[in-house]
Image 1 (cartoon, rainbow, N blue to C red):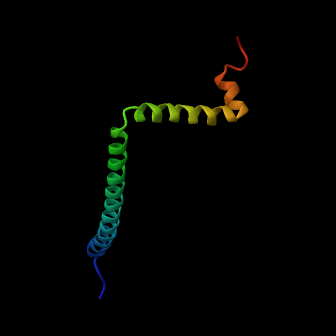
Image 2: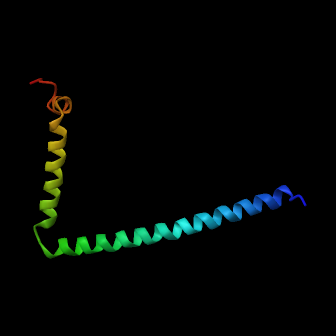
Image 3: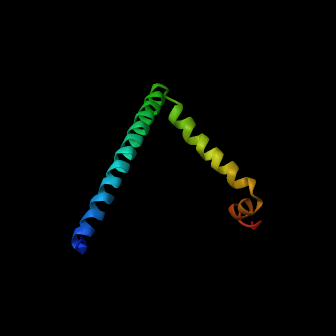
Length: 83
């Protein structure tokens, strides 16, 4: 017995949606766990008044160090030695 193209297409679509639905619920669980972790992190930061400022300057410092490690990027940032 041969299936019609429309029936085969519906079957494939149904299988793909079932597969995607399982993936979506796994992704939702992952996002939910990350959301909980980030909420705990922000609650911890909220307890200390200086923490946000220190974190921001820490990120700026790390990015500056990473950029200045490479001589080519350091030269580009400093203007190629021009005064």
